[in-house]
Length: 330
Length: 271
Image (cartoon, rainbow over all chains, first blue to last red; front, top):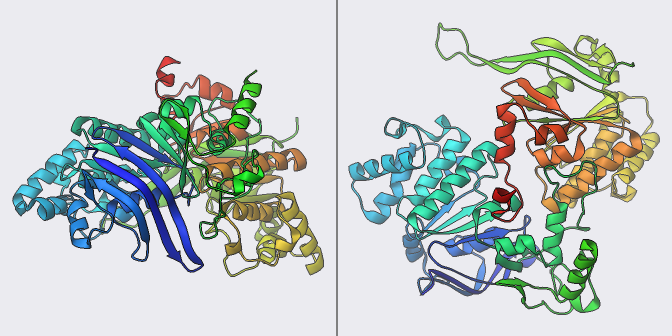
């Protein structure tokens, strides 16, 4: 049985301007030890997908489809039972460590909290375990610093502390939502190495959310590119990078300046802006911004087509896209 | 040879922190420790470094928004920090700034017209009609329409807001634009639009950029010269091709090493 099985996940959020379909028809499975990256721009639905796995959606959100953790349905589970899963079976690391930590509690207390809550450890035992965890995530002199407050740590150290919290109960699934966006590049590298090491060491499954293609390239085996609430392309990371097929994926790759690339060249831009989820037109969400748009693109949402080993793209113009790629290469 | 557009000489800025002990001396943060460089007109300098390296302090000093502890900033030979207030105000038309956060740097209660015209209004001299015309031109040059003038910032997306901020910087026809992380708050596809725009404007108006960024790829794309700032000092400077291919200072190398490459896994080890 798969650790995590998501089938046809649909999330509709109630906004002031009406219902917004933030996630549409997302499906994937994840086994222990596997790593999955979610890439996309702001508003593409990647964080909402992660939040729905944790049962952390706003109260007015409507969820359709199914999310199964070891065969157990999470969608529609009462809050009490969701609380038992969060922080125990599923751990989460957030983008902004300063807001994820409570400034008025010592870090020791915050790392020990899930252990007291889910494992029923005594205060002394939880404290001992918290010291071991802080030590594992690389907080120097953990035994002495356990009674310090979050503001007494640097940004990178704070993120290490939130990782210790997420790991406390030995979760099966770790969700990291933009874990390094607020950090400097050299610190980012250390944190990603720490996460990678921990995932391998404990055999957890990892879902890594990032807008940075570089972060995804180096840290996950499989990736999904999201746009307008749906997965437009997915596959093994190496395949997607070697052979990006959906026009949006191609656009993302082209838009990024490359280190060591020629100076002064033009970047390929994607014209227009991300569609409002409130009034998503029928058909492909990328239609209109896409150079390959034909009238049929506006009619129905394209199904995923296989484009390589384990790789799929939701696009009905794949032939035209591929033909152009061949031309460019020649 | 003519004087460079911007010449920064031995710039030092120390901040005195609040006292920690009643009778002890207050701690001092040495944000900048003797930084010197110059930019020729029409060329661009990128400043890279991590948070706390002094990048933003440098921007504030070059914009004459803060007084240095020692050293000088010269624009076309004139020391900005020695100018009388009236002259400094007039001189400000030659250097403008674009900030990182297009949400925080535009007043939500002002129309785009008022935001974009503000530097002209501060300079004085231009009539309302003239200002309006210039604002329309500035908006057109960043790819927005003149009838956007009556709108408010919330009606625009992040990338469009950054265009408004750039239009505001352009309206005085400055020689130098200091851009502090101009694209780091934007999505990748929008980032590309703004970077292309900055390039076009340089070709069209000959503006000089001082671009502050933590993103080496962005600097590499836009700048003729790069200075690596570390602990308040420039540890290495040179054209991006040389710096990013044969970095000498260990810190530059560490910075380059840490940049995640958008390449499939394994490709990097092989190369």
